[in-house]
Length: 506
Image (tube, rainbow, N blue to C red; front, side, top):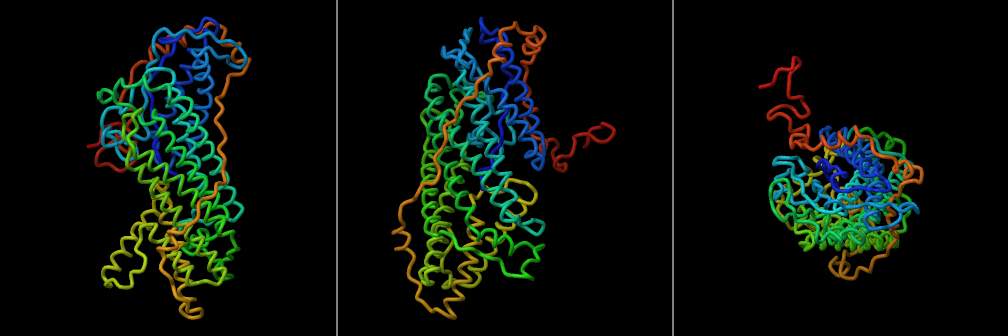
């Protein structure tokens, strides 16, 4: 359960056109080389099928980590700061102008598809200043870390007939790895909000690739970065709870058609620290609520609306977190013997998720239509997970709903046959929920610095052939930004546009 996002592509950028360094002449050329490498890998990633994109993420991460030290060296040189304890003199010839695609802009305005599929021109935004480049590169880094966290969680969710439910050790390892990646995302967004976005207010508004003047990518707004920081913290907090939550694994095992363990023994459900997990979920809901409010509000420093899909995902995470908190309160009451109150908590959790709690009074056909629609949604999510598609966009609502339904069916059966306790209304329980409890503290992002030996090499004059190649790489084609799936109308996905003999297909 991590936000699926597309990766952007930048336009070519030649730093020697804008910047020179008397003390380290090779620094602008080398920075442009690493920018070109990163751009090439991002464009390659966009052309890959969705099923092959996760395996390409480490190459993009390597390109980002190689490019960032040179980018920060130029930034510190312009700010007259030392780089690795050494003075780096950087002179600005003219203001740096970069051009990047946005990962959070409203797709309806840009003419892009839901996940960044290009339909208009290149859909990029222009910005002035080295801080614009820093902002977009670090935002790309945050999205890459998110996508890697999604890949770590893919093995945790055993869904569908061909899925394999992982062992407890493998499951905990995958959740811990994804949680650490999300905490890195929190640090990156916090650094952008505090150190970078404040200096971008006057360096934007050059328009975008579609010709719209004054357009600014949402990534440049401090409020948007704050919302993304809160959203990543909410996701990391929910993962901390998921590591100690045995019920999603039990539901996945029950729904797995290849599982044969039920023939030997029933799944073991260890006792959990229910009250503590509930308060952690409330804290996650508070983070997600703040993220939703910050992303929904139009940011004055950005001037661009965040895509509704991202805002809706934050709202779904908030609902999932509150429903999970209700479930844990119900588990705590059920362990204490108060089954009636526990059932009330579960019905309150269904209300938090947006499901109808208590449909006994409805007509059979109305109730049946609701179940049919819900079943279609669940099957669609299962297929997206199995095929490697855009799964997880509902913020974990489907998974949590399955767990709640399993527990409600079990507890209602026990209460009807053994305990026969009255089920109180759930509204007072929801109104009296306690405050949340934090578990994570985000570590600040530390900008990387060039090593002393690399800085020493930058004192040499640049290679003339390399500088000439950078000057020639000034063209850009919007066709390069169209994913492979959009190659031929009417053809199968990922099918090449020409036949075996090279002739065009009609």
